[in-house]
Image 1: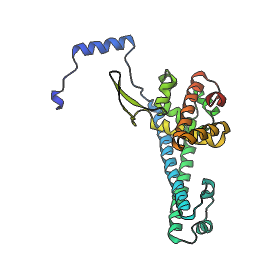
Image 2: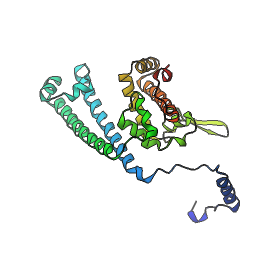
Image 3: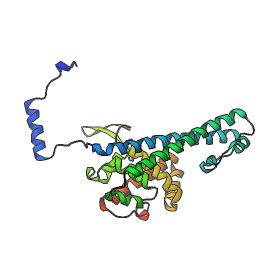
Amino acid sequence: MPLDRRPLMSEHDARHLAHLLRLGILPTGYIYPKQERAVRDLLRKRAQLVRYRTAQILSIQNLVSRNSGHGITTDEIRELNEETISQTCQGDSARTLAIQSNLAVLRVLDEQIKGLERVVLAKARLKTAFKKLLTVDGIWNILGMTIMYEVGTMERFAKVGQFASYARCVGSSRWSNGKKKGEGNRKNGNKYLAWAFIEAAHYAVRFNERIRRFYQRKKAKTNGIVASKAVAHKLARACYHVLKDQVPFEEARAFA
């Protein structure tokens, strides 16, 4: 419909909205504080580079496993040099060049990520209300600040389900007039917060035995991706209670 033919808001509608506003029950969106946006954007840039770095690691692992029949860990990739690359590729010059290219990009990304982290740590610190995040397995200073800057304030979330939904840790569905109309809306929630909890889940599985067992049980029934999302969901719910109640993380309670 042309702009000049769109119906204008009626006086009745305006009065109704004004009445809701006066009563304090008009739903409003959260406006992120302008003074905090610069650091948040740096953390988002760091997250982007971390994803690129992961792509380089996966590419190298794929090249090695497809052509040699055995895997290679991330730590082994970081120790690669010209001699070990040649041995890994069994003298194949094309594969050697491919791995060298990935490795060169990987090392540049490592340096850029470290540089961003230094700037972020110089400009900001975890707020008092968010310091309890550091008690959660899988969350360290930078990842804690990523969660803090994406959340803004916990007052936005009245219930744990709202927080988990905003973090994209639960399934989404579309309803109309009490009837389910569809599933899966990738635009719901905060993709950066979702990424942060997936990162936390990966680290928690590596370094916490109880969480690793939970992950392995889920993976045996489904697959690794679903299992990681299940861990992220548990961590998101735990973080909500940690921040709301200002209590340390209890792994036995979260992963019973």
